[in-house]
Image (cartoon, rainbow, N blue to C red; front, side, top):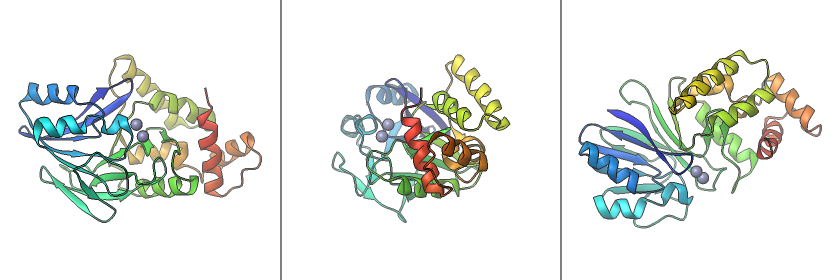
Amino acid sequence: MELFPLPAFSDNYIWTLHNGQRALVVDPGESDGVLAWLDQRDLQLDTILITHHHADHTGGVAALREATGARVVGPAFEPMPEPLQRVSAGEHVDVLGLRFEVIEVPGHTAGHIAFYAAEAEGTPLLFCGDTLFSGGCGRLFEGTPAQMLDSLTRLAALPAATRVCCTHEYTLSNLKFAQAIEPDNSDLAAYTQHCQRQRSLNFPTLPSSIGLEKRINPFLRTAEATVVQSARNHEPATTTDAVSVFATLRTWKNNFK
Ligand SMILES: [Zn+2]
Ligand SMILES: [Zn+2]
């Protein structure tokens, strides 16, 4: 099986997975690039997975369904281009011999879901849409800091080796913010160098892994003393409570240059 992020728009990735014959794509915001990719490799599109309703994740769904007859699976509680199979927490989706569990991750949108395969050729696989990014997390358009922190905590509890397939190449800008929070984090410094090299060669920084994110992503590190202190220095009303720290970081990041 081959996992590959197809670039789309300015910084989206449409994740693809195929077994040489049949393919899965996640959050296709557009269809032309996906159709060309399928054509070049002579693949049949089996299933489209959708994590949330934003147009840059769903814009290509209707055209792909029309052109390929692929099954579409998406969140139960989001406005979605019909027809689709709607799934929610506790359900699973079987695709290309893999079983994906549906994890509810509200915060970026109210009904956002993630897809997690515990058994995927030896290394677990997570498609998490705009919830967890490498070094950061999604903006809170429809949820509260407490909801988003809860969602991220659920993802952080997955095995360390889990491959994290995020939908945007935001890594370098996230790491710049992360370094402002934790200037002495040596894992973060090493990872930043690695990602700068990747981007200078026009390679993706993704997938990341849960183990790595727990060492470098401030939004998963709200209990670390340095992270708490940085949040409090920035916003003195911040308490040591994880939700309060998270809320300060998220607001700070919204305006960080
Ligand atoms: Zn989004
Ligand atoms: Zn997006």
